[in-house]
Every structure is written in structure tokens, then in C-alpha cells.
Length: 305
Image (cartoon, rainbow, N blue to C red; front, side, top):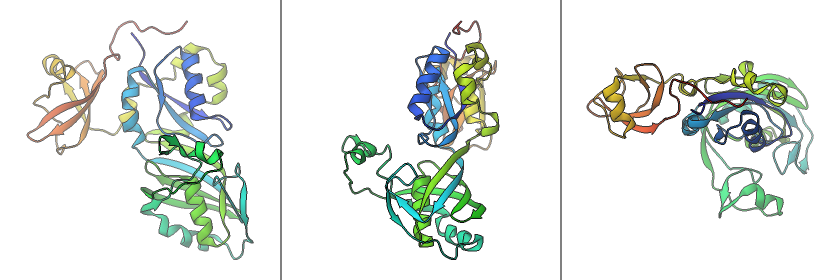
């Protein structure tokens, strides 16, 4: 039986999220590994790795809020939005204090429109934008709606400012930095970016990169959390053997968690506690299967020696 679960990794700087997935595959001896939300190569912090059948939950974890601590360098604008890029403009930094930064941040709260940066993984005409950017091409990008729930100004020490940002899926901190720099009249780029939380997974509990590289596989497996940890705050529906059989065979069941509205997603568990999958509540107190997990069953588990 293949393991299914979540390994929360603290990605180091200088590697891509794909590199991190490849390393986890090698260290744990798994083929099916995915991550919930790309981190820029220079960024560090929380990168949840979903293992085995838990990869079916990637989209649901990716939809959850994320938290970052971003250090911005004022006075310059780059083609990437961070310090890895080419400087395209410089300007003096004048009259920037905490009050002015806080005022400049306010228009970026709530649901806003962002233009994805050219150096991003967004698709355009069948290719990634960063592939076009590396060829010196720039294309028109449609603004996308994103949600920024909080921006806390932690420190202003010109030319650096440090912000804590809580945001929804698809938010580009490099775009936020560039737009904030424009609002301050001097430009800005990300100097350092740390993702401190993805959904329920916080940096304090993440496996260090050094441990991922060096620790024995058994020690890494001991850090794997159950698949349902990715959906920690969801309503729970527990099924008896008969209802579970219907659910696992793609049929709806005549049950739903109390006070769950139609359209809500729920965690579905068997009577023994194992996660069966994701369900959607329908009218009339029914739940239909949306994702069914088959590997997270009790019994002997096969792990690499």
C-alpha cells in the first residue's frame, strides 16, 4: 500500500519548486508527488508536498490563503519584480515613513486586479510567460482578480521596508511590490520573500531543507502528516460501511454534515477514521463524491528501506 499524506517543506533559496518535488520523490521513493503553490526560486518557506493519493487534494490546498513576509528594496524597478532581474529604472526615495507606506498599502487590500509579471508560469499561447521573457519578448497580459486580506507594515528602514501579507490564490508578491513602489513614486522590488503559511501549514512546523537532503527516509516519513491535514477546517462527514461503499463507487449518499449549505465541500471519512475523499453537499441533505482516495487504508504500508 502506497503512503498518502503531506510533507511540509521549508524550501531553500536557489531551487525551483519542481526541484523540490524531484528531491522528495527521490528521498521517499515515490512517483506521485505534487506541491500546493509554486514558490519563486529565490523565495523560501512553506511548500507543502502532497504524496501518493493525497495529490488529489492539491487544488483544494492551493485555494487556501497564504501568508508571506516580504522585504522590499525601494528606489529601483526591475524586469522581474525582484533583485534577480535587470534594473530598468532607479529613483530617489523621498519622504517615505511608516505612515506613508501604510497609506500606500490601503488601495491594495481586498479584491484587486493584478497584471501577471512576464517572469511567471502563466500560460500564453501554449508557452509559459517566463519562456517568452527569457527570449526578450513581452506580450500583453490580461489583469487577473486576486484577494489580499491583510498587509501589515512590520518595518520601515529606507531603502528597505518589510511587510506581512495574507492573500489568496494567484497573488504575485513581485507585482504587489512593483505596484506599491509606483504608488510611493520611487519604484520597488522584492529583496527577500518568505512564505510563512499555506492554509493550515505554518513555517514553524516545516521540515528544513537540510533535513530533507540528509536525514534517513524513515525520519522523513515520520514527519508526513495524514492527507486530511490539508483540509483541516472543512466539515467532516463520517460514513458507515454501506454508505462508504456507495461513495467509493461514485454514487451520492443520503447524508450531509449538519448546517452545510448546498455547494459546500466536505471531508468524507470511513467509520474507522480513514479519509475516503472529498464530497460536495447537494440539495436535500445529500453528498456526492468529487474526489475519492483509494490508497489511505489501514494495514501494512510499503516504505523505502
